[in-house]
Length: 329
Ligand SMILES: NC(=O)c1ccc[n+]([C@@H]2O[C@H](COP(=O)([O-])OP(=O)(O)OC[C@H]3O[C@@H](n4cnc5c(N)ncnc54)[C@H](O)[C@@H]3O)[C@@H](O)[C@H]2O)c1
Image (tube, rainbow, N blue to C red; front, side, top):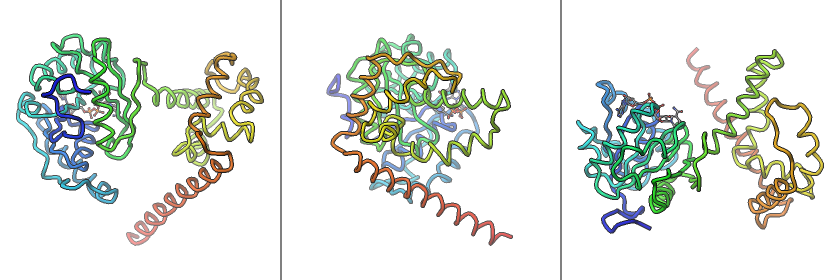
């Protein structure tokens, strides 16, 4: 899978460099430390090291509860005095600098110049494509996007995608490495503004803003609608499998045939796509793949067990917090 024998294989990574150590970079540092890696961080801000060490200390108890990898320790973190020193020995580099295109272009070129050949360099960007960011690098083929969710030490998703000048081996290497490092990885075969998860999130967000703007719902109602409703299910079944069950025994096909016409009803201000045969078939086949061998009855059982688990976990945290605030009064 690697381009060159000097590249560590994804399961042989020892040292990760994190360039930029704010909210996301610091979160990555905590994650990689908990996974047992040596981490070298670099950030040009004079306050960065103190902030970073505080972030990692604050995250550590949760990471201990979740279970640390063998050898994981806060002391495996080094803060390097220069960018070049931070990346020189790294087997993988995660860039999490501010979201400014010029800055990303020149920083990625600097990292590329300083890192060992063929080491994969991944950007946390949430808004730029790698195609636009990799323009100044000498070896753009090893640059990928690894888009995380905040906080990266708890939320498992990473969306991995290359740019026009990225080689496929780098995308595959990064995906495999993130998987080994405990992440849930989506390897995308094309660049897509907003990636996948943010597009879905953005659709809900836009609708929420429309409803508040028109005085139709309050932020409180919107948040309750999500957390007491679809949000609970979405923690384990996505919208496709959820609507598959909404179709009863007929599954996704029945759901689309039955509720398809209501896509034209003015339920949202997002323009809906025309429900063509092709879209219908792709949804039915794709959802069937997600369901796999599981029958509807099995899916319902799985859903209900997970709903109960999420609700129990939430009420445990609520009770702990109530006890804590009671004992403080
Ligand atoms: N905050 C989020 O929820 C989120 C989620 C996913 C992805 N991202 C992406 O992660 C990246 C970082 O965002 P953030 O929220 O952590 O921002 P942040 O402002 O918290 O952190 C940015 C850090 O970069 C440092 N920095 C400034 N100039 C630098 C340079 N030239 N080289 C290296 N570091 C530099 C700053 O000192 C700061 O510590 C962005 O690309 C952002 O789009 C953010």
